[in-house]
Length: 136
Image (tube, rainbow, N blue to C red; front, side, top):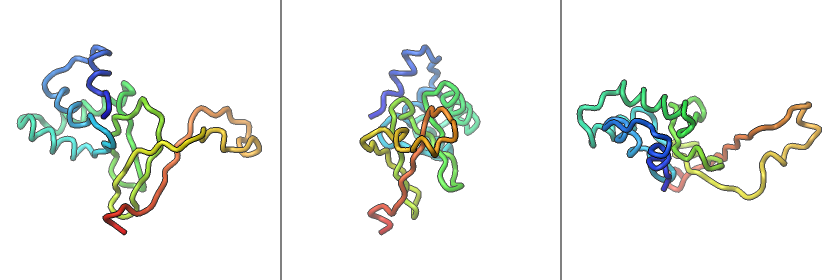
């Protein structure tokens, strides 16, 4: 389970009922919802929440660095509350399911010095692709 709600409280993020619901919807393990999915789930908890409020809250969470935007193959952006813990993604090429994975080793070290073209590396994004059990 992610610690999104705890992190936001610790940062003093003003926790209105709408923001709390958005954070609750995103809190968890392997959560990679689209903004529309966040809104649909938030409406079940707080029927009066607007789509604009959800989009605004997601934008704030991304700016704060508490939620990461994940884009795969031109599909809708997804929001990952696991932004503070280094991980990679495993994406189903069929249905688009995304799972967090934690391969061993440092992926930054896998790029040979001759392939860095003088860059000072600060990060790496690796996406593993395949078919989930439902799509096989």
